[in-house]
Length: 308
Ligand SMILES: NC(=O)C1=CN([C@@H]2O[C@H](COP(=O)(O)OP(=O)(O)OC[C@H]3O[C@@H](n4cnc5c(N)ncnc54)[C@H](O)[C@@H]3O)[C@@H](O)[C@H]2O)C=CC1
Ligand SMILES: CC(=O)C(=O)O
Image (cartoon, rainbow, N blue to C red; front, side, top):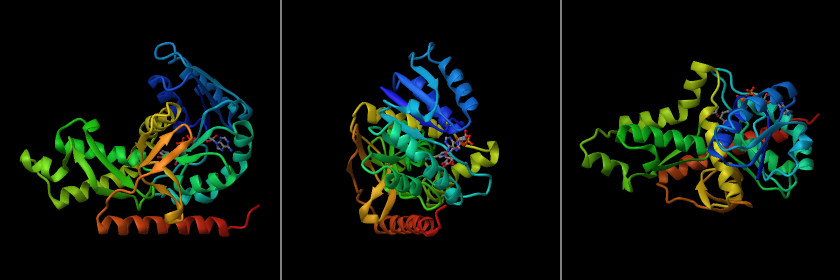
């Protein structure tokens, strides 16, 4: 089971490290326009293999992606403090137009797993640039993890026992779908009330703000985020490799919304096998519609740009 990674920067290299520590695959190849960086990152991660699960970790030209079952794409610029993900669109779209031909030529059978921001619009663009190949974006898998972490901290339980989805854009319009949230199978308010734990509209609003604002807070403090997304990418990739039918909020082209966005989706070797539309409140449905509108506008603005 081979995973290719395009873009051996902070996100790509951390994904390689997470794949290695989790034993997600037997082979990882890192590629980057900065070949020296890719080589050094592969060498460093390879030294974790003998003390974890023994994967073969190498670097090389895009040609070396051949035989990959999944190719993670994390190439491109990241946000500077104060920048939004959508601010990265033009420059990262140009990088994708440049690299996608090499990726599809080398690994025509791979599922493409996009991480570069703005991930929803670039997932849609990648699906156009790689017709016939399964393409998904990491979407709101990371946001859903952040949401679960924040609820778990309030509830005083392990985050793996908190359920809940963030939907729509991986970005400022992400929709925190409280109606999907549960702690140990109970609606959050019920769980909190039964234990006399504080649960107010202000606390809910703070959790929503912290879920949406997490990337900004981390970027302000250390210039980039990579551990959360590295683990999320490894999890998504291994669920695809295992054909596990896991349900994750990945981004994918969604005709009903006219854009790529995140909804809970069943994942297998062929990529997205099914999409689940949760029973949302009217307010959540409206927020999801607004989020989709923002993404449609961004994609339209990209298509309106003259191509070199
Ligand atoms: N989807 C998500 O949840 C998250 C997405 N990101 C995004 O991931 C992307 C990468 O972020 P970082 O790793 O922090 O940036 P970075 O600057 O550390 O790494 C980017 C790498 O891409 C490489 N690159 C540029 N053009 C390339 C090309 N044509 N072919 C191959 N490699 C190329 C660069 O040489 C560099 O090594 C950014 O767009 C960032 O916003 C970051 C965190 C979370
Ligand atoms: C940077 C980014 O997209 C994130 O950490 O959510």
